[in-house]
Each structure stands twice: as C-alpha cells, then as structure tokens.
Length: 182
Image (cartoon, rainbow, N blue to C red; front, side, top):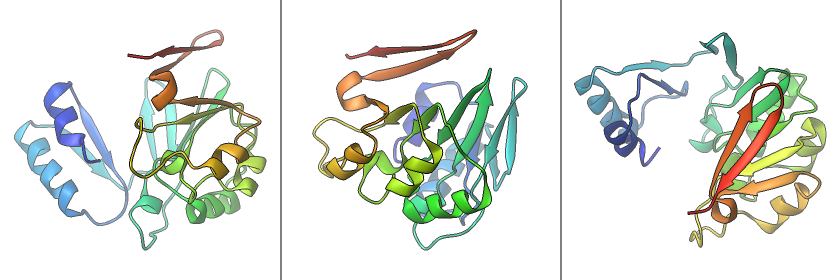
C-alpha cells in the first residue's frame, strides 16, 4: 500500500479495489490522487469479473489488524487455481478455511511476505499448493521470509522476489513460469 501513489503516477490504472475495512490515512491520501486522476475505486467487493475470469474476494470479516483485513483473492484460470493472500495472517487463514473448500491450489501468493504470522502448517497442508510466491525485498529489515514459514512451504516450488526477481506466471494452454533478476 505504501507505494500505491507512486504506482498510480507511473502506470495506467483504471480501477483500485480497497478492502472492506474503514479507510486509513494512507488510503485517504490515495483516494485524493484517484479522484484527481478520475480513477474508479471500490470497497468491499465480493467478486470482480476481469476478461471473463472471476476473482473472488474471500475475506469479509473485520480483524483488529490491518494485515488480516487484506483482500484475499481466489481465482481459477484455465484450470489453474490461484490464491492471493495479501498481508493476511493465520487468523484470516483459519477463517477462510472454515468458510471455503480450498484445496489443491496451484499458485499461492504467500501472506505477509512469508512472515511467522502467516502460512500456518495446517493452512498449507489443507490448500496443498504446488508453487509458493513470496514477495519480499532483499535484505529487508523485518527478516522476511521467516525460516519457519520456508520450512512449512518446503514441499512446494518456492519463488521469492528477493532471489528470483520479478516472477511471471503465463497461463495459456499450460502454465509457464519465468523469472527475471535485475
């Protein structure tokens, strides 16, 4: 979220989807930029249809921390199941597992940069991901990803932005994965 205004200034953005929580100060600053640039924004959506692909926003419970209020998105494209956990942690994981039958996920975008507050063993065992993607900066001061999270994810093919650079999943007739270290 911290770089959202820079993204708006550097890329063409048509729509922004906020989580269902109240707007925080950072989001209110972003809304000013969105309004100035006539960019649509939405809050609290349950699903989004993009090019005949439905993205389901799974979390609708309010938590007492901003990370668990992240949008958690599930979609299936050409038979490939994708689960994007945002910054959500173990509490949100438990809740979505109790509400949805999520299993055999092909691509998991790991929650909260692979911190110790996400990717519980029970969650990973239930969703059984093939590939895990951890968005994390090199030498970040939080020490992400956490060694325990990496151990829990060890049976998946792990891609990390600090090691692999940008990661591209191309879904056509089959899944192709490309990385680019800068």
